[in-house]
Image 1 (cartoon, rainbow, N blue to C red):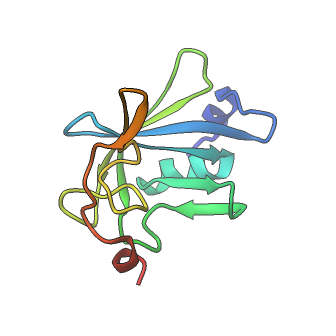
Image 2 (cartoon, rainbow, N blue to C red):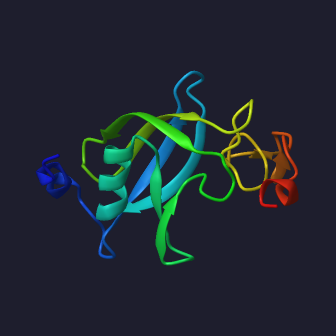
Length: 131
């Protein structure tokens, strides 16, 4: 695959671009992560999400430890070329678990009356995900 398309991405000063993973069927925003050039290229080649883990300082093939892989249907970029949107199907559990807390989405906290409340249930105990 020609890689010149990667040159059009506006990478930040650390060589990263923010990425949003959105579920194809529901439109739910499941998670936010980062990709470097290698991760975005690998995602396009594999058809599965590969991110850059800032905490581990390495590529992270989503699902490599949890089994919760993300099948990528589309890769889009915003009008400023500085944010990537993945349209995905979350695999490995039904309903799909994208969050390391065992929830469907990483965006499970909701601001209500000046306080954060949990708006989504745990679908699988995280201790059992990473056994």
